[in-house]
Structures are given as structure tokens and as C-alpha cells.
Length: 261
Image (cartoon, rainbow, N blue to C red):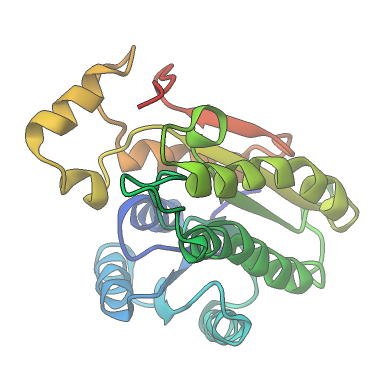
């Protein structure tokens, strides 16, 4: 799909990988809806994109991907501004680290596990199903394609560390959902791929002390540095433009394999 002129929805676009992806899509000519639970961040990113790439090319939408009403309202607002979306970037997500049995001998809180699964896995499915239902109504483009969506997993889906049960399970669920979703939506001409990023220089990562960041970067075989959000965004954009990419999970990690802890 040629990105130029098409409408895109980007969840978690108020910061980090989502923000970089929204900016890259806008640079390539897409009309971008900046979806984020934090409206202040979403408005800031949308305003900056508009200032750089043209007024009207970005709209901010407050959105909780776990709440269907919130998602439907955001999709409707984006469609009113830019027309129906053909691109969905599922990037919103949260992290967690809890040992199954704590130092005091108590079991990990079930609520924590459920929250991570609800946001990362169920929230992504929620956004995907609503997007797909609208996208399937659109006229096909070249090759019969109507749209494309990208999931954001993690290397933790494959080599999760101690305490990452909830996070790894949620991201592993996205990996497992990729192929059946692609097969399911093939009849509608909607492609599905997943990116599994490693260690990236996101705002969350930058909150760690510099020595910790340096140690993490040194664990990456090559290049021995943290990934750049722009590199994630470039891959996400390539998936959109390369029509033969479908049902695939792509690790973006500099050959990193995570140690147990």
C-alpha cells in the first residue's frame, strides 16, 4: 500500500514508539490520528506533526483501548477528520514485573496479571476488531488490499525474564494471534503483521539511571546500543508499503536474546 494520502490510526501515539510511528507515517504523507489515553500528550504530538507536515494532517483522540465506547468514539473522530482508516498501528501497552511468589511468601496479585493482559492483548484485539469491521467496508486498492494492521509484541514473548509472566504472556498472545488474524482477514484484503522490539530508547527506558541504560545497551550484540524509536517506525511503515508481508512476526532487536534476569 502506498502510504501517501491514506488515513492511519496509531494507538499509544502520545510518546515513545507510538509517537515515532505517527511522525513517520505523517512524513510519508498519511493523515494520522494520534490515539492515547493521555490527551495532553496526544494533543502535543498532533500539534507538532501538524506544524511540521501541514495543518490538518494529524488529529488527537483520547482513547482507552480497553473500553469499546472510547475506541469507537476515537475512530469516529478520526474518520470525521481524515476519512476511514486503512492503517492501524497497535502500539499502546503497559509493562509489569512481579514474581509469582513474593519475598514475603505471598502470591503475586491476580489483578496485576489481569490488567496487563487486558491492556496489551485484549485491548489490541479490541482496536483490531473495530478497525477491521470498518476497513472491510472500503473499496479495494491494488492487489485487492483494503488495509493493514501492525501489532507490537516484544522479545519478551520469546525469552521473557524473571517476573515478566504477565508481560510475556500478553506479548506472546499477540504473536500467537498474528497468523490466525491474517488468515481470518485475508478474505477482506486486510494484512496483519507483528513487530517484536528489543530494548529501545523510549521515555520509560530513559527514566532508568544512565549506568543501567549503558549496561542494557552493551548486552545487544550489534549494534551495541538501544534501538531508536525511529527504527521501529521505519519498519512499521515498511510493513504497510510491502504488500507481500502478511502473517509475520519480525524481531527488531540487534540479535539480542534476553538473559533470565
